[in-house]
Structures are given as structure tokens and as C-alpha cells.
Length: 239
Image 1: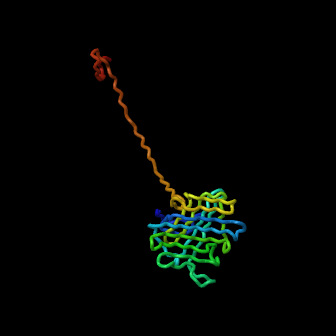
Image 2: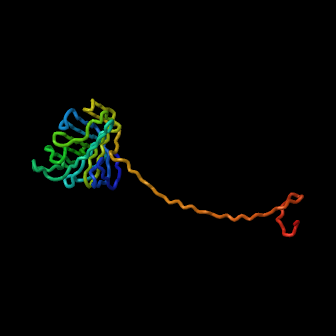
């Protein structure tokens, strides 16, 4: 696990603008699936992370503050989409969108698509020390813009808990990648963790001051002597 400290970020390609997060924690991915078999309502995205013996921790309370989910599929025709996962109560089921999953995690459910196309999300630290994240996005309940990159090379799933941390599940160094005619992209069992956030660029400006030094040179006329010694010029002497 790696934790990257930050102040705030907001980009249409990363997270909804205006949301601030404390740090980005990286979680080892397991499976990343993007499907677009026919019509937009058939689109489906599933992202899973599973890290045994993890030192990651859950920072934030989505029940009170909500969160976001950003999905990115990279390759020939890359695409990115950020979904808002608000707190509150469903007007159709009367249940909270976010709820505690026991004493060690949180889960989000919106099976009717009242908010976005995100059907469910789970973030959990198990009693055995494992860390799990799972997200399911369905075109049946909302608009899904992320499709197989054709060919796909990598992917990222970024879960943010508003007022807390973000959790990056990267599939850049995937050991197995499957592409199927622009209808399916799958990456599984990445060999390393990684951040889904863009690198931070720091610009340093400096002012250069140039000093000009004037050197005064005194010319001395030297006269040779038969003994090869040198004496200063004495006015009136040898003139």
C-alpha cells in the first residue's frame, strides 16, 4: 500500500469539481471488466480489488458525506467517466444509499438508478486484515459512457470518500488482458499497485541577478637590465 498526500483536486476526467480529499491510497486490483455487447443499456462495468494483509485503512464517512467513483479504460479509444455517489435516502425504497457494512466498511446501493448508473459499491477492511473494493456499473439503470477501448491496454477505478481519502485500483501492470472486437475488455491480476491520479507538476521560478564588476588596470613599464633583473620605471631615468 502506498499513500499519497494531497490538498485538493477537481477535474472532469478525475473527480467531480470542488471535492477535496486528504490522501490517495492504492489497493491491489483483482479484476476490471468493461462490456458493450450491443446497445447502450447492455453496457456493464465491474471493478474488483482484493489485498490480503493490507495496511490500508478506511478514512471518511460516506453515509454522512457521500462519495464519487471514477472509471477509466485506456487503449485505442480511451474513455473516462465520474459518477456521483450521494448520501441520503432512496425515494423508491426508503433505504439509505450508503450504509455501514458491519463495523469494518461501507456499502452503496442504487439498484433503481436514482442517482447514476452505479448499481453498487463496497469498501471493506476485513477482520483478517484484507482490504476489498468492488463496484458494479450498469447501463440498464443509467448512462454509461465508458466502453471497451478496442484494443484495451489498461484501466483504473478510483473511489473517493468525500471529506476522507481516495482509493486507487490500477490495472496498468496487468498480467492478463483480454480484448474482444470492441465488445469486451478485461484485465485481471495486476502485478503491482498504482495511483489513478495524474502526476503533480511543481513549477519553481527563480530570479537571476547579474552583477557587473569594473576592474581598474595599472600599466607598469618595465626596463630590462643586463643582469636580467627588472626595475620600475623611474621618471628622468633613461628618458
